[in-house]
Image (cartoon, rainbow, N blue to C red; front, side, top):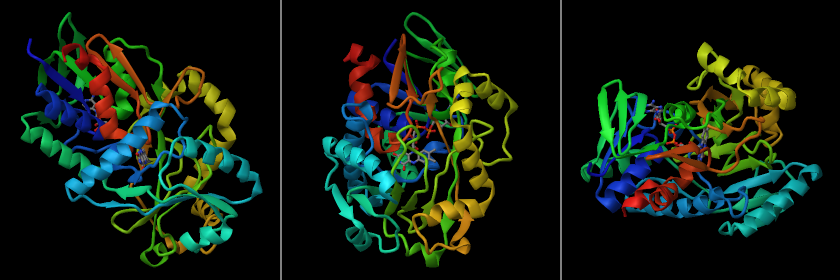
Length: 400
Ligand SMILES: Cc1cc2nc3c(=O)[nH]c(=O)nc-3n(C[C@H](O)[C@H](O)[C@H](O)COP(=O)(O)OP(=O)(O)OC[C@H]3O[C@@H](n4cnc5c(N)ncnc54)[C@H](O)[C@@H]3O)c2cc1C
């Protein structure tokens, strides 16, 4: 059979990979997306930050692909006149107890060659973010804001202009692998591909099981909720203000992010979602919740982190508790400044059986199927670099 590559998922990864294959190999490409729009899940529900690589273990895929992805995203946005604002980020230590972690992070960031990185004392911090509390900080001036939906849409246009197909409302329900082909059933009919690449985000473990891959790692859905600051108070935040992360839970803690539209978002927090695509407390899937709870890793997670989990849930349900956390960074913030709830996202973070978080990007292969099994933040930043990596290292190389 001629080379026909099927891609599951119309988020930024599926579309970036489709674009790379279409433009660089000339193979036929078809993207299958279950929703009626591209970027409906993580890609369209994130913080819109182009990360500069401060956090990641040197030598990891995250460190390598985030740095390359940042450069490619910047170039892409400039070439296609898409918004790209280098507003810069400060990672703030609130007191002396956080200095050890800030130092360790600085060391990592220097090894990762984060562009323009500097250490700030309190006065220097105030010259960048005049309203912030904190005794020291790291400044990453090249951290940027973008619109990942717009980037995905532009790349999708390139795919279809070059002859690739993007089929919306096409939910994959079963995959059969034959010697040389994959047969895929969707809500709109059956397709046959020579190879497949799965970028299904929150459903990546479900699709992995359809092709007989190991059920581990599993996606345990954690929602990230945001508040949007009022127009008046938004001026208090110039760029991005981040906490010094806990290495076990790098995504926890209050973040302030100025977007390309000028809105400042406070969040995301991390609360257990009661459905894989559960964007509020009212959306509950008994199947997804039961599925999460019977995963052995979930029990260890509950035992280890119940206290922290309860704090996050309480702050999600009671605004004054969340406000108090946020005031740790911006003491002048008032309740009315957190004017409205923003659009929440759910993280497709993979967890292993012992309840530990899978830190790095993870890619598996089952015969002709390549599976992106862990692509959490900074995968939107890294998308174009991940696409290059997949093209170079996975099944397509057998045919090049
Ligand atoms: C709250 C939050 C904040 C974040 N902030 C940032 C940030 O600032 N910077 C950054 O770099 N990263 C950030 N991330 C991470 C980033 O958004 C993701 O890593 C990235 O979007 C992953 O892209 P994706 O294409 O793999 O997944 P998705 O965008 O989730 O796309 C997966 C697609 O697969 C489709 N699909 C699933 N199952 C099927 C099926 N059976 N059949 C057909 N289609 C299917 C889904 O409908 C979906 O469209 C954040 C994530 C969250 C949740």
